[in-house]
Length: 397
Ligand code: SF4
Image 1 (cartoon, rainbow, N blue to C red):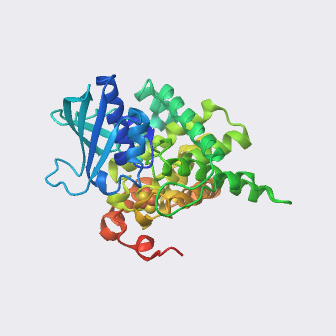
Image 2 (image 1 turned 90 degrees about the vertical axis):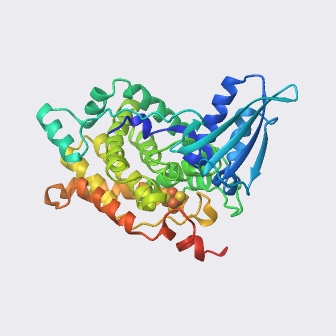
Image 3 (image 1 turned 180 degrees about the vertical axis):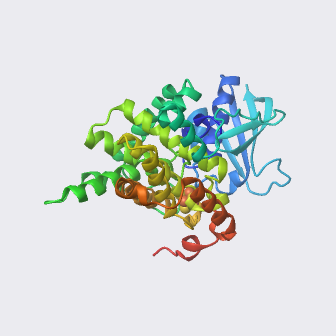
């Protein structure tokens, strides 16, 4: 398996290919040509869904308002479905040009460069193998991560700082999200609407939902988020962890360890199945995020490896078959609410694991394989094409 840095990425939402990749390209262009102006032509999918995904806004945020962004809906024979043509301008004349491809997961390639393969840093590729190794060595999952990736603790601290910042920004923001759906932000309302006589249980659900909405709305608005494991599912883990810090006073260091445990589950899903809604439906995004959050929370509560496995397994099992049908291709309906529901489910999965772990029948490895097979069997209409489900039937009411 690869580094957790490949799983948890920090960048501009709402899409790793449509905003994180272009943001990375813009940062590189700015570094190469600090004094220049830029004309960028977005083609293929970057043109077709770039407005709803804030591609132009993200480019301007990095390159400044002088950057000219053109949406070219017609150009064919592109080297990649997500292609940008960049013209670098100084003193009114073009001094250089680049073709930049956003190849997924926030990665970019400047034409002429080859996409270097990222190295494998974990030698175990199943939860059973890891569990066996841990029982032989008396380590916990975070220790396993830090032994394999010596700089992971530092990186995950950065990840956690960004998650907290994203939630805080989302809780303070108001107004409408970008795009044709005119969806209003709700995180602040949820956060502030304490009811008279609210029970602890209702307060817990309200707060967790507020935190999940906050991160997911920041994502929808093109804000800075952490893929956990994707942009669309970026609210689940921050919601659970932010709540645990705020209400139950877990330390940042403990939460960084929880993110390491969650990362191993995400990495296993990414390696042995998929974390892509386009490949396996929303079960691969929200189901994976829920499974990761459950593993992280179980680690936070110092549960044993069997309980961590069961929590992650339960969280994924009850998302099997979940379709990806974003209305108008925007990461808003049903995505934002779905993050909140999954965050609450992660907590429920840990509660079940607390009582029932030693009666279980299904392993995490089995459920990951099941999710993959189910996802491959899903009709293409339910794999991020917006051609089926809610995306097809929703007509504004
Ligand atoms: S519905 Fe699709 S776009 Fe939305 S969170 Fe799920 S997988 Fe991502």
